[in-house]
Image (cartoon, rainbow, N blue to C red; front, side, top):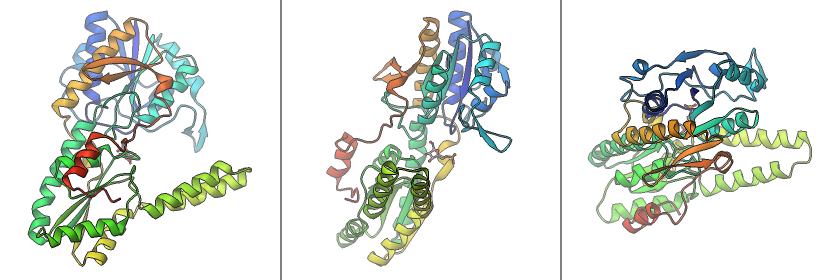
Length: 371
Ligand code: F6P
């Protein structure tokens, strides 16, 4: 059998461990040939491939990023020569030209959707869940998350001492897209005093009050861990209103106008963490500083937990492909790797349930979640 591997979407620690796991198990246990597409779906479209033999898969377990390169290209809306084109058929030709029996796509929510699209076009596709955001549906956890949570937690640990020395508020922005897993996990593990996540719109006044209450009880500093997708109650209401207008729009013009308003709101929101810091300073009369962790959370060597998860899911993928399974995502459920139909994954986002044990633990500690 021949299999192709593609890494797509934002990179994430553990991708190379997964490529190694899939490739080694495919070659050793099933005598398969393995190739990798360069730079995400664009490489599949441009037929830029690399052969992955056993020696190519050695020494990559601990490497960050992806040896294949990645991109956020979508098969059906790929920018080519300044235009957005549907390149699905060209990709299908490449798939057939290499006599692939399966394409294994490693990615987050967007990649799961793109993979389903390719499956519907006729490819035998298997996916793995990879993202620091941990928001892929159908799996307990995605690889990349554990490493990013370690990095964000270490940053919060370090911010504690400087916040303490200067009696300041430090607002630390954590990635996570539209899910709060990373901010919540790192916030709890790092002992943040306030944790703001997209699932719970925050009341700036309530956040300020919780900081003042800490001050009154003798704690003269506060760490506020804010997820990049967290929204104030006001922004969340405006976002909901604009989305409803878009949903109800009856003409292209109305839809375009709603999209423009949404874009404007998103641009405004890109400064939300700095705005929150200024508002907290005004309301509490305490000095506040902002730290945006950004892409540092996606870089560097994967944690042992991510290496193990990626290896577990990667090797299971090779066995499932050998059994002829496709149009599935190989998910982690407890200690098991299970095949979940791609239709149950694509287009769904796994956000933090409001009754999740992490939320309950944070509340029990007296951490403000901004509500
Ligand atoms: O999905 C992973 C992620 O790091 C998100 O947390 C973040 O919103 C986004 O990717 C950043 O994307 P890019 O690397 O394209 O700027």
